Amino acid sequence: MKIGITCYPTYGGSGVVATELGKELALRGHQIHFISYALPFRLTSFVENVVFHEVEMSNYPLFEFPLYSLALASKMVEVAEYEKLDLLHVHYAIPHATSAYLAKQMLKDKRDIKIITTLHGTDITLVGLEPSFLPLVKFSIEESDGVTAVSRFLKEKTITNYSINKDIDVIPNFIDSNLYKPGADCAFREHLAPRGEKILVHTSNFRQVKRVTDTIRIFEQVVKEIPSKLILVGDGPDRSECERLCRQLNLCDSIKFLGKQDGLVEILNAADVFLIPSQSESFGLAALEAMSCGIPVVSSSVGGLPELIRHNETGFIAEIGDVKRMAKYVIDLLTNEKKYTLFSENSRKRAVEVFDKSIVIPMYENLYNKVLGS
Ligand code: GMT
Image (tube, rainbow, N blue to C red; front, side, top):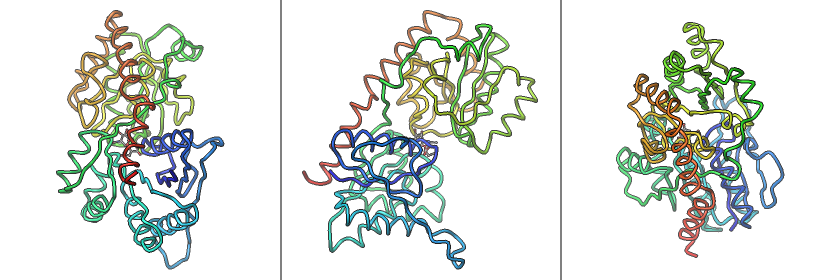
């Protein structure tokens, strides 16, 4: 198949899923054309069957606001026409599904290009609900030939919040469990915790929905009981507030901000517990990455997280903001070796058996075939 993929190219789960999907489809012989304003950050080296098309932006002074959605639609038309695409698979509804709709209309006399829209999270639960976007998001979803959501939670939210009367396939996030796998204790661990302290880790884009300050509050309670360190990976709007909180709690020596990092597998393999106390999380790709490395996860009970994390089996789940309970769960895990080993094994097993790319990628291929009628 010849497939155009559009996603946000910068850091973020939807861009990761879209790029890894494109790379895997290319390995399976499909021709993949990424269409975006910049090279997706996970597309770091040459992959056969993958081409990148950059959306060029005009900076004419009359256009006070960049007209990206329109430029994207034009580029989609160009690529679809000259590369003879069968379908456009867009990730994150706003504005990608709308640009794809426009491209489809422009192409309608030449080819019947199909549109698949994958809903990832805040496109439905936050931004899409704004009055200025809601009717457009609803329309663009309904006009897509196929729609997928990354969890049952997100599917249900889409149907209720947008009164959508359309089939939505649930296709979860996936992982390369050969890459994200448990590794031997490394020098990195010794560097982070030279006195054999336990290591808690959190990775995110430091936006409000991630409640990174809760992560710090959980750690504050854990460190009172167990010698430990907290590693925070990523960057974003809440980082300064988090750094202030560390200073205020006098925890600067125990908490390390690593910023954005590429060597995530190595960092996860140095850790004991992964924390994700989000306010909203439609799937929780970061938690899956940790589980695949055999790291038990302690999370909030929101969104799609309970579909990923098995309470009292692969990790623990608590109410949003219940820092005390989450800390109690972490302490329980770190002081009970037998339980810890069992949870670690269960986490890895669930990642491999349910969410490995070899299981999930065919779900997308099946949907493509269904939509193309082949
Ligand atoms: O919705 C977002 O915040 C954006 C999106 C992204 O690009 O990072 O994240 C969402 O998509 C991921 C991949 O499907 C999911 O694993 C994340 O749970 C989801 N984030 C939220 O729902 C907050």
